[in-house]
Length: 419
Image (cartoon, rainbow, N blue to C red; front, side, top):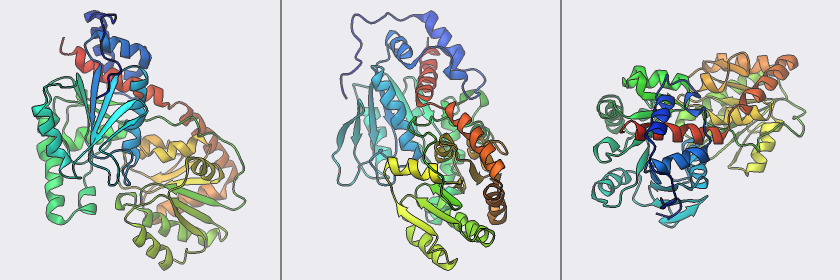
């Protein structure tokens, strides 16, 4: 672990009155933004030093460099890099990345990448039990399978849980393993994590975590994700109707549902074009779906694109689509929104906060419902313009600085609760 942010003799002594304020702000109603009021991330870092916290470890399934990295990995990276910039010593512990070194310095923090996709879970727990040089605080990213941190880390700790996985288990695993995963998520883990501070992305995800996992409501906080400031309006819209979708090509994103919906939309909009940006193991299935509905000439699957090209696609699009079964938020929706592009998305937890239905975009269900929503937005320029303006305004309220600050406040709330 790097030496950045190690407590020195010149740092403030512990101030129990400040600690009490942190607790009061971080453990309130759980509403989005409650934990982000007041001090900046830099100021909270200084408070952390005074509370005896300078070294923070983040344990996660995948690293940002993993070929299958997605929104969860980007979310953790944005927070860690801002904490490191504020002077905290931050280290990641994840599974190995094929062809990449076991350790890497990135944006001010250190990433340790060892063990396989499944082996990383017991390895991290064993490291936690055996270590004599433990971090001052821990952040666990519970992404489907938990690390069971309540059993091996007894210091201040928070847990990122973006959404309940539920049906996702059977979408990606054989039946026996899927049943085991869902049982752990719904029966075993909730008992162990009842006293943990859970941090999720949206009010609607919070509701599901409380109802489906039976985590006490007062233990679940909401901190929305940010939007990178490079996403802004600009350039020219496509001359023909253009729908853009972005994400990993994996079953939970249900891009086959998007393709089916757009094939119906094209009956009313024969010049419609579409692009699904991303890569993943479902490519072959999606290419087959594209062929089956006759979309080879008007729907592109370009794989991953550069950040600059992604922004250009968002700006050119008439609407961005998202058809996931499960999401904690839907960051591509608010990235596009920052470019004044409205969204059409499935009516699920997460999306219900990323898209304000009827204001920044439309929510719908099923092939027919999604097709109808796309047709409404594509066919009504005034509606599209109104939704786009509101979407941009909504996205402007979301910053990664606020996300990092609110998350750090939640962690310090757990520190102060031990006073």
